[in-house]
Image (cartoon, rainbow, N blue to C red; front, top):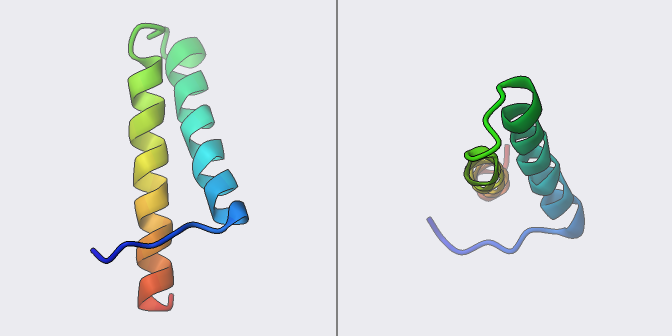
Amino acid sequence: MAEYTLTDDEYAEALRAAMDASNRARFEDNNPDGAAEIGVQAGRAKAEEIARRRTLGL
C-alpha cells in the first residue's frame, strides 16, 4: 500500500479505536496483560482501514 498520512481527525479516530479495544480487553475481558498489544493492533488496523478508504475514494 502507498504511504498515506492521516489527518488529525483520522488519527483521532484510530486512537479512539485503540483505546476502546484496550479498555475492553482490560476491563471487560479481564486481560490486563494483553490490553496494550490488543490496543496497538486495533489502532493500526483502524489506521490502515482509514488509509485504504481514502486512497480508494470510498
